Length: 159
Image (cartoon, rainbow, N blue to C red; front, side, top):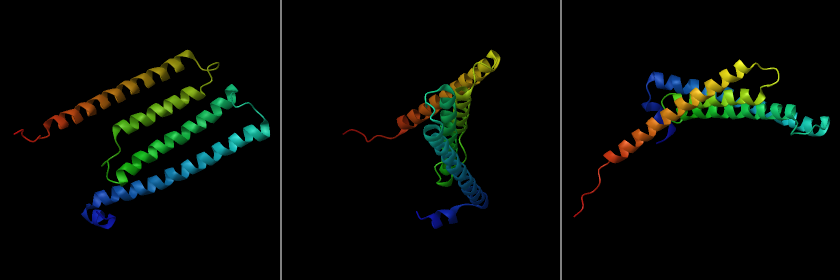
């Protein structure tokens, strides 16, 4: 079906939702481009200007923290694009959980263990574990729904 035909079938709110998602997608794309530019700039600066070893702890935290920012933004943009292309009607909870897991993982990577209290580390680890369990439970539920839908399909009778 052509885009114009699909657009004609949408009601007013669905059109509004698609337009907002397009705008959000554009803004997130700008953030991804800028974050990737800054990442490249810092990597070039590390190698050529400062001569630092990329496996040095401080450099590692900075580079991988910036990589995680780009990955989080990409996942966020992907969830918005799924709404635009009618794969999803709204942003899915599993995607939000995945983004939260990525964000907390990023925080754990860039955390300075020497100056961070054990309670903060424990709290972040607990939240990460809880999000992981909820994500796993939702995935299990979806897998069961898919399996039950496959079992319901009608098979041709044997002669």
